[in-house]
Length: 122
Image 1 (cartoon, rainbow, N blue to C red):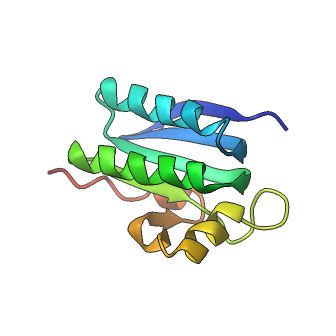
Image 2: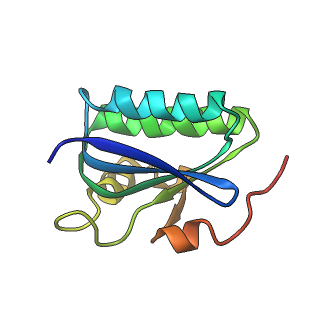
Image 3: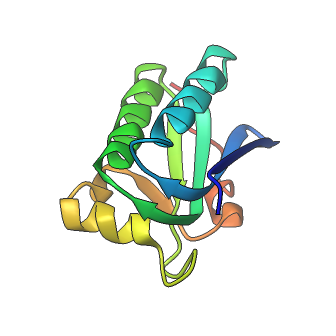
């Protein structure tokens, strides 16, 4: 499966749907898309990672950097990490949990839940 990042809007939220492997080679693509969204003034972002079947430390680094960037803009970042996703369960969910950084993120099981509440304004 090729790495893909598709963007869209859902109310106040910008949504980036990510699919494939989030690793050293592909993570700069996601980093760039997050930076583009912020540069366009979109500070409420949902990253749908339900179709990511592999994530290494560079992918985790991009997620943490995205959180830091969005927070610096008084925005909101939400992750979609279903308990079961991609092929055999949400790999990203397991990796973030194993590294002890999952608690840093607002995590939702699907898009409907992630965009249900309006973002808090600063």
